[in-house]
Length: 62
Image (cartoon, rainbow, N blue to C red; front, side, top):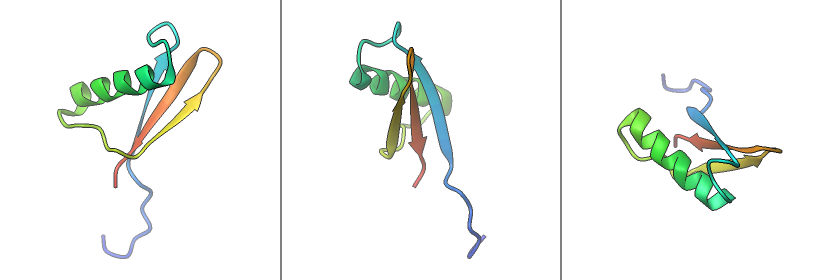
């Protein structure tokens, strides 16, 4: 709807530190998972939140 204040569409994928050795690898793995889930490339807007045993990778639609 025009003029509505909608929040952006986001997808968060958690990658454990056993699955990826560093943040860059975690983001690449999350991009691959996003592609498999949505059959389209992940958005370029990405935020990474480091946790004790994992990373939360959040993709935000423009």
